[in-house]
Image 1 (cartoon, rainbow, N blue to C red):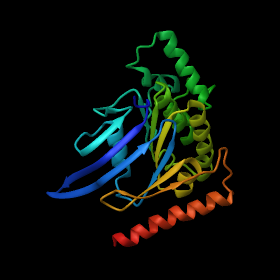
Image 2: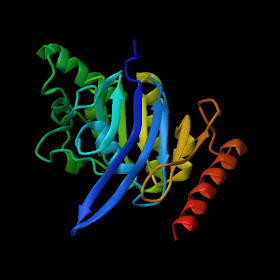
Image 3: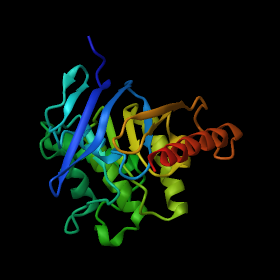
Image 4: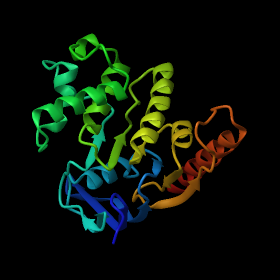
Length: 256
């Protein structure tokens, strides 16, 4: 029996048609992600990173190949898969509590259970005391914390992250990377992070998947065998950052 949450991406091909021209975005990509694993995906712009996340979340089924989670094919969005985008996408007319609660709209939990889940996840992301605040009253980092709480409140087995810290300043980004690591260890779920930030990818990931330029396929996978909690100044991490960065530059030259 397949493990709950195991992600199997099998020979996936994806094309788009733009002005009558066919663009091959993913070209036979295969990858298996174990339950509870943190995988970072990097590569040049246009290599299909965000497209792959859309396929994983189930927003786009027009592709060739197979994507299975827990042994079952992905047929559409599911409460078992949460996603966080670069923009927090909070509703401006709702409080933090109500924005997080939206993640439970289709849940079968009782009202009391929903209230407890919202409270617990607001605490998980460090927003206690801001339950009644509105998005315009929050900093960018706080709004992104609320978005992460909303994505996690259903207790999904997988969290997909599409450049979640890309719009934040460097200090806030660094702090939220630490928070995301803490949340990942607390929730014990699989996380798949798409990012342009190689240091972020290495700092957070168990593995870093480097995609080739379009059509996207795996150029190499770099293991990050440094135990958590990690120190950014660790020479092993710096060496791995250079390895990943070098792989991206090398593929970029090959694409020209």
